[in-house]
Length: 219
Image (tube, rainbow, N blue to C red; front, side):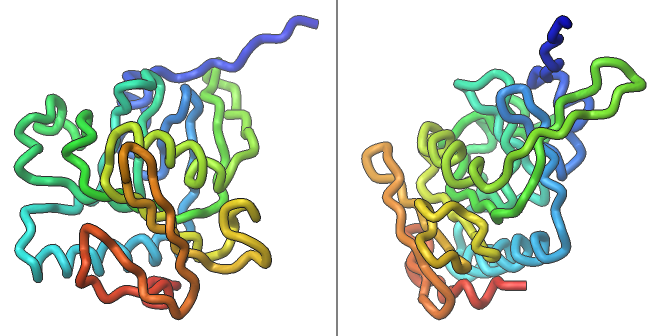
């Protein structure tokens, strides 16, 4: 019996086939179907709304696009799609792809990213037109492990992990599992992480006057 390795996507193939579909991202050639649920989208929308209100109140020249991909300079077959992303408008002029597609190539254009943790699957693209995608088990590990490294490499100042269902591993959110909001602040190239539970007031370096609790964004 001969084993045929699954076909993986390049960044360019992903953009052509799935670039305008907000439910997909690409990690190491594997198609991630994030399968967003209603509660997931509600939490993401609540976070974006709170941040945008603070941007307007403090007159920051930042924006939150409806959808956006990050083309990672180190990983050729990776296209990350954060649930919420805050961009510096002044830096967009130096983005090589922005005028044609909502794709960010330079980490310094990004002020903050937020990921809402949810269960998802990885799909291996069809080899033949009649083939069905093969599902590969994965979930919260991308948000808590892989993306922590990727976003730190891009030097994104702040990364929020919003685990409203308490899905993360015990090593990430503790025991017993419970809803957790993790703020990762970049210090000397490494994220320093602070966890918040229900009832805690969240502290953000980028938004020092932001009045926010995990309770405020729960579905």
